Each structure stands twice: as C-alpha cells, then as structure tokens.
Picture (cartoon, one colour):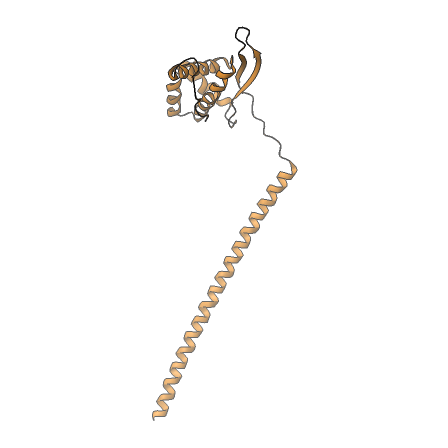
Length: 188
C-alpha cells in the first residue's frame, strides 16, 4: 500500500480527501471509467485495488468493510455481484490509467482511469521454462528416491549392528559358561 503523502491533502483536510476518494471510487465502480486529474487518479488507485480485493473475497465481513468506505449500498452490490466475478482470476492490476493531456483552464494533467475487466489470458510458457520445470520435478523425484534408498541402507546397517551386538552377547555368555566349566573342572 502506498505511504501517506506529506504536505497538503487533496482539496483540504484528511477527512475531505477520504470522502472525495471514496466518491471517486464509487463513480468508477458505477461508470467503469472516469476522467479526473492525474493526482487524484494516482491517489485513488490503491483504494480501488483494495476494495476490489475485498469484493473478490465476497464474504459478509468484506462487504461491511467496503460499506464502511463507500456508503452507497447499490454501488457495493454492483461491485460484489458484477465486477468481482469479472476480475476473479486477475491477481491485482484492476485499474488502468491513460493520460489524456492537459485541462484548458488550469493546465492540470488529465487522465482516464478505468477498470480492467478483460478476461485474463495466461501467458504461454517458453520451452526452456517448461524443460526446466520438468527437470526440477525429475530431480525432486530422484532426490526422493535417493532419500528412500539412504533410509533403507540406514535401516539395514542398524539391523546388522543389532545382529552383531546379539552375537557379541552370545559369545560373551558362551565364554562365561566355558570359564565357569573350566574353573569347575580345575577345582575337582
């Protein structure tokens, strides 16, 4: 989200700016495209993007958050029922700003800000990226196979260690029996 600007606000105090941006956003949702000054459009863009993201969520809490910013229920209904389904697959970038030139009276830079409602077409992946992804997937499978093989070897070594330990205990027991037998025969 954009950092707050320093210095004077658009048109007056912060409350006036917040209301003006909310009204501009409501007009944008109603008409899908509006003509305004470049400064107002650039300040409105993060607000509109955030509201559209809430609309894509579509739950009651998101609707109430949008209603807290835009008071008009008909605009909020249109945002949630008509605009949100059109941008469901789009990951951000819901607005487009096009420069129009300068206003005649005060030479202010004018722009047209519009909602981007065209369907998203996924970019075709290049052959190199597809090959790299396949190689990475193959490497991951190979790594998994190697991990399983190492785990099997570890279990086999552990089994051998237990077997050797059992043999050592058996040999030690046999030596103890032999020593007792030898001592028993020498004392006779």
